[in-house]
Image (cartoon, rainbow, N blue to C red):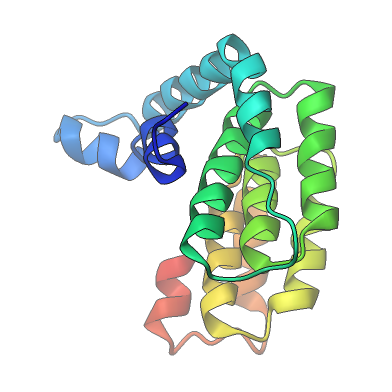
Length: 182
């Protein structure tokens, strides 16, 4: 309990699939890396659900959004706890993430909830992706994050969605950041 919230958040963070593949080096099976990482996240979310829920509740930030260091640490821990809780896909964890998205007073919390829901392709993930784009799609850096979420979604519609995004007349194909994000 006496460990800094940011340190707790980092301790609960698993290496990305890209980092895992890089560590493996050769003969990487991307699907196996994805499946094992998701399974580990779900297992951690299940085994630690009580503690994660307590940490999530304790790290709530009140009084409106600021970039105060204490709030940043609390948001980091809260959003990491949410990601692990959602990984086990219980109705309660999915409801928690949806509520986190709907009640967020800042984009950091909103995109964290969206990322958690997209990562398990919840039943409302597509709707929330659309909502997020309407709210924040005008900001190029946020648009990059949104594109990356679309491209990393584990649903059957991922490739057709990417093709549709690329086919949009106003998609900035001459911008390497947009292409890299997608």
